[in-house]
Length: 582
Image (cartoon, rainbow, N blue to C red; front, side):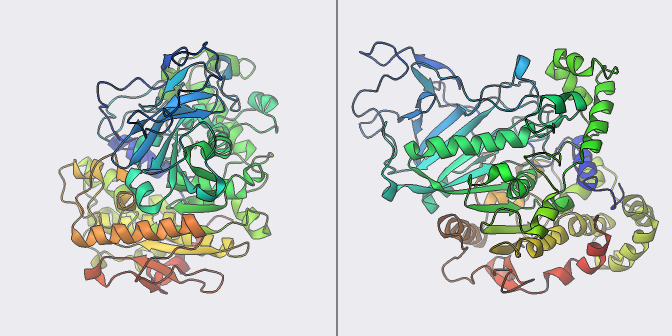
């Protein structure tokens, strides 16, 4: 848990949440309990259109494409027809497969194109969640052992004309947001957020994505290297994300979206994924802007091939496949349940060295070789309170003052711990847990986000924000814990200001709803134009011309949204930056 170990601190933090029954931003029960009339995701409703011969290319009857005649919307993708549903906010198409399912011989293979289907595929229920443990989120009390999970969801605003078989005319297409969920790359699903209101308010088409997780998404080994197209294994989950972006480029025009105006965005592990795609040559041209929310932890670092191979060998032994000569074949025979049981304690993340990610993202940014697209990047003021709660108070053992020095030593090492204790004295905080939380949030999220701003400014526009509503209600998993712990502007909490988190309404008060509308305006402006603006509020500062200035998102009673030039100092980054891994 030393700060000098690259990519290790966040693994430990997520491990704490797993023990607590969380898993960071774990999968949410968005829209759980669909109406009884819903057809299970993936089921083909009919072999052919009424009155047609049954061929895959048969067209629907006139008027069936957009719900304009009162019927459900039907759209033709490159793999076949899908039937969605009309809602009060617009149209939704759920559980659309974007790649061949990675089952059987395709386990630990790069994503392949979908096999076309005949007839009309029901797109009214979410696809399966990828393999993951149970969590404390509503509706996710049981683990998922399903590998048949590579699906996405499309939300188009009401009044969209992109519903017929032909593509929507270019001059009326809407910009597109592709959202990558969080969960430490070991948990989560596209259903974590329901973005229909955001889509309507901003005039965008929103796509949310499932991708492979944990060992099934990030296992690396020499044997798998031999199978990889670029000689480097362990990036399956992120390759899934790029496959989804290619699906968007090919198909989103039929849903009313503009494939030339795609913004890729994500929170936490989803934000870290976006950071990786900025540095990935194989992601070029798949998006024209990017949003990173609390995703700069560990400076977006990936594992080396040596690290991935070591993790892979240790995982194989733990899973009961100790012989390197037969380990891969042995692991491929194992049920997903057994692999899931063995994956805890490993650093599941991207691997550097191949065509997908030739060098560490930080190096790509410094070289100027990363995607030269506008970026909106930021973090939350109190990121660390979620992790401190999960480690201490959530276990019924609040951190005691006498233990504080030892915990700092265990976390940061003796040399740095002494300096940390001086910068974060207990007298300044409401409890020792909150003092420790401040160190975690600053070291792991706030200062890396500011470093990323500086790195990205060398290759194009980058706009900095900080979510600073310290009165924000804890997100739903925490609200259900029956605690009065003060979370403040903690990790994940900004998501509910943009989308229906868990598919649920958040208990925002009047001024928080005003802040939510303002944030939606900033994000919507960025998706449309590449510049985040909101009426009556300051524009987000471009780090090329205003280095270090940050858009501080606050409620009216806290002074309103302002430009803050003291964020680096407030988070003690002069302490943390020199200690960051190089």
